[in-house]
Structure formats: structure tokens, C-alpha cells
Amino acid sequence: MDYKNAGVDIEAGYRSVELMKEHIKGTMCPEVLGGIGGFSGAFSLKKIKEMENPTLVSGTDGVGTKIQLAYIMDKHDTVGIDCVAMCVNDVACAGGEPLFFLDYIACGKNYPEKIAAIVSGVAEGCKQAGAALIGGETAEHPGLMPENEYDLAGFTVGVVEEKELITGKEIKEGDVLIGIASSGVHSNGFSLIRKVFEMTKESLDTYYEELGQTLGETLLTPTKIYVKTLKAIKGAGVTIKGCSHITGGGFYENIPRMLPEGIRAVVKKDSYEVPSIFKLLQEKGGIAEEMMYNTYNMGLGMVLAVAKEDVERTVQAVSEAGETAYVVGNCEAGEKGVVLC
Image 1 (cartoon, one colour):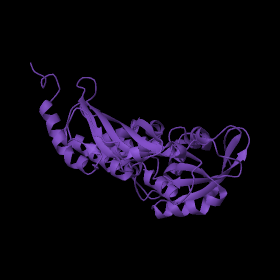
Image 2 (cartoon, rainbow, N blue to C red):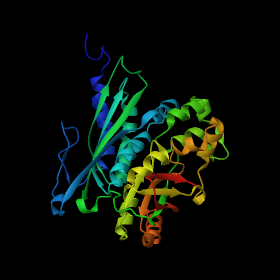
Image 3 (cartoon, rainbow, N blue to C red):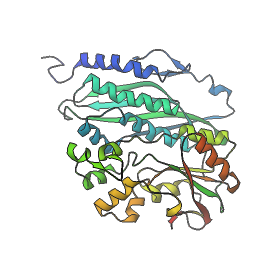
Image 4 (cartoon, rainbow, N blue to C red):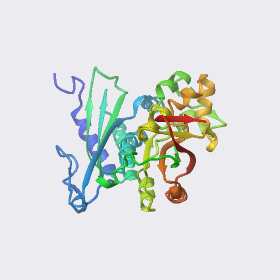
């Protein structure tokens, strides 16, 4: 008896590391110290020393049950982007710029090419976020997980000047809400999606005219990473007073998280076009509109609060960063919360 007979293939682990190295190299920056494959990742804080009062911000998350679609479609090179996005977007909401990222893959069996494909997505997400992929772990769990399944989670650390932290405490009546377009469902609400649509290869390969592609292609579209867009807004001289990453809990849970007491957000539903995937999902599932806005991003991956005089500069900065912005509402005096009208 040996470890391989017990279900853990050490040689496959070595091969996985070799295959993923090329992807990881593309995320490196001068601050990364040491090579790939050490016991820990080292990152120099030399540049941070130049900041007045550097504050670390961190985030951790996974991909959730969206990962089941990757199994069914045998497409594993995009869920890593989702994993990075879910972490770095939260850090960006606080005004932080991600420094580095680490991933964790648990699998029933280590198939090196599959693991490398997953890590290629993680590396692509890190490039989009400007973060270095300085470490990670791939763990085989034979007997605990089916051989063809895996789970993926990650962790990031960023930095921001303390005085530039986005806290929401300065939001006041008359401030304007700016929504930044999502790429679709992102990585939330898939437990409901899996109840509405049959999770088979045939179902996911079905082409929908209103989507312009198959259902699977639409649902596997990676989560937008907003780090560079928010940095562009800041670079345009705009103070972002509040920022909400619209994830699980949709509008009703996430927008109030950026608001101070005594302020409510009023969002106009007709201020932008809701993407077709949400309309299809609502229709097929017979889902109430309130539940849709309480579960999904409905086409807005980020919602920001800015002063009225900064609206034009914000929209222009978002456009120049290659994204789409909408003026979706405003802030009013009232009980903390969100009103959709």
C-alpha cells in the first residue's frame, strides 16, 4: 500500500505545479520575493512605506455552486476569474488596491491539465485586478469528493491610505447613485438557477435567441473585475462616498451596507436596460420581481454614491476604463435602506 493507492497522486501534484507556473509568472511584479512553489509567498512592503498611513484591507470568497456548470460543460478556465473577482471587488469597495492573491483548490482527484486550466483563470483574474498570484494549494480529497469535482476559494490583501477609505459615512441627501454594468449573473444565485434550468449538457448547450449564445456560455461568463475602473474614477479626481458590490442578497442587502443611518437609496428600475438573462430566468422560474432584486445584480455589478457635481466625471471615467455607467438614482433622507421605483 502507498499514498497513490490510497487515492492521492503526488506525481500528478508535481505536474500540476509545473503546468500552472507559466500562468502564474504573468502575474508577478517586483514586490514578489522568491520563486513559485515555496512554503509561503513573500511580498515586499517597500512601496507601502511611502504612504502616509497605509491600511490593509482583505477579502476571501469562493465561486459557489456556479462551479457545477464548469463540471458539466468541462470548461474550467473561467471560474478562476470569478474567484478572484469576488475577493478583489470587495477590497475595491473599501477603496483598496489588491496587492496579492492566494487560491485553494480541493478536488476529488488531481487531473493536472484541469488544475492548470483552473489556475489559468485565477491568473487572468489577478492580471485584471493588478494583483500578484503569490501562492496557493491544491488538495486531493479521495473518498470525500467525487473524482471529477473540485471547489475553489481565494484570499486577497490590498492597501489604501486610511484617509481614502470608502466608508459611506459622508453620504448625504442629494448624492447620486451610479451603477456600473455587470457581465451577467456573476457568481451569485446559482442555487436558484439550478432549480429553474435543468443542469445537463443538453440544456446548457441550448441556444437562446434573446441571449445571442447558449445558456451555458451566458451563465459561465466571468464576473467583472472593477478594480481598475474604480481606480480610474479616483484618478479623475472624484471622491467615491460609498460603494456596494452587488453580490448575494442583490440590491436589498448590499446597497444599504454602504449607507449611513438616516439615508436611504432610491433606485429607478427604468434607468437602464436589465440584461436578457435575468428576464429569461424570471420568466422560466416564475420568480417574483422583488425576489430577483433580492438575489441578483440585475445588470449592475457595482453601485456608487458620489456628489452631484461629480456625476459627469464619474461616468466619463468609467467609459474611458472600458465599462458602462448609468445614473440609477439618488440618496434621500429617511430610514436606512433601499427603495426601488
